[in-house]
Image (tube, rainbow, N blue to C red; front, top):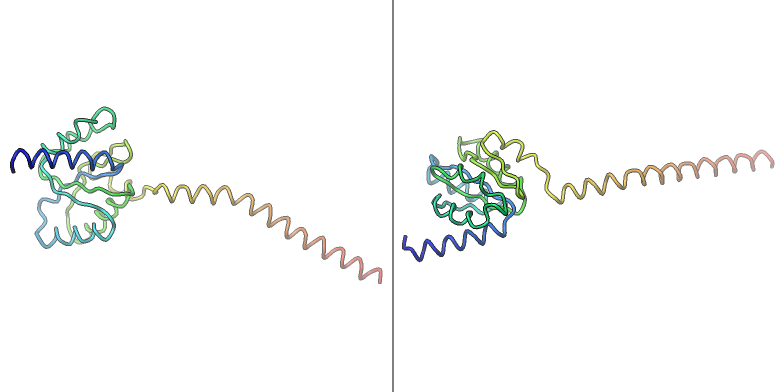
Length: 175
């Protein structure tokens, strides 16, 4: 790879990291070509972009905003073979990894960057897979806010039926 190609790749990675709030650093080194193709296909289906890159290039791309974006804890994870998974939703790559590992031992999670929080190690995969997306949290809050209103309205409506029933019964007695 020429110096110009490396510079272009670092610039591309810088842009990718600046645009993405969610990325995973993984090791998929022992997978066969067929398994890597299946993993890439699964990633594509789920909207995850997977890139295999050299650690030194990733390190150079991350160094510029390391303090500002809290990338520094990720540096120790950049050893050995590395594949980076970029996603729009924080838990999707973890779900992809879990689903793929039903039939394979890899990929192994080295680290994950979730909106300035850093998760280190493969033991974090279950916690990451169970994270709720921003949309899920907003929907849950809306449901919680609507719940008391629905209860009050339901009580008022059932109470209205009870009062109407009492008035009707009283009218029938008088007649």
